Image (spheres, protein in one colour):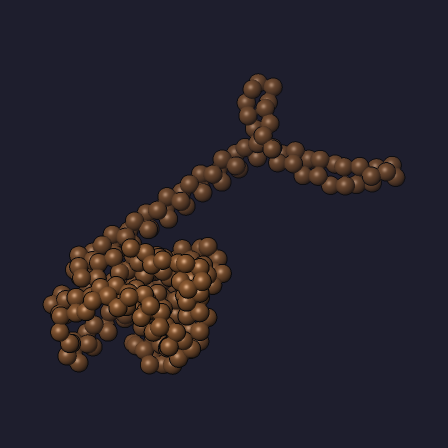
Length: 244
Ligand SMILES: [Fe+2]
Ligand SMILES: [Fe+2]
């Protein structure tokens, strides 16, 4: 509690009370401790952490902008996937920190695209098998780029796994079910929804309904059942609208 000293200086006091027995009747002992210094330090640390989180987010946004510059046709895709992944994580009841990490991960999930020649990224016609293999390399490349950044969340690993599918039909490692990180399963659903609902150079936007139908159809086979259901519930029952 706040406390004003005789000389007018404001202090923070920490009080601790214990019930004791005093001459056969109950009594309370209260200990007051000056915690002004500690409070001050705590506030300072909290403000440093906030500042650090801000710089981290801004740095990831910068990296994301870089990807957008190289592949203007899908500009904003990563940012929107991050927002959708955040919303799904919240719907799943994840801790706030973990939800925020999903937004960050989404923001850079296709960073590995910088390893793909720009002509391939914007090619309006069907890709050759070799070009397709190069495009698929972006998941591993994203992991290689981010693996040494000490995030609290498994950002690099989730990025490597964001094209894995529950039945093992995905890439790059062909992981199955529980072998795939929950974070990557959320990212996968958010990625598919955004990709299908948004416009692409080689086709018009398919629309949100088509995207949801795909998620519903692949539920349990390609996409984690719980994650897919959370996404469907968000849009169909809770009026969630895709970010612009
Ligand atoms: Fe991707
Ligand atoms: Fe993506």
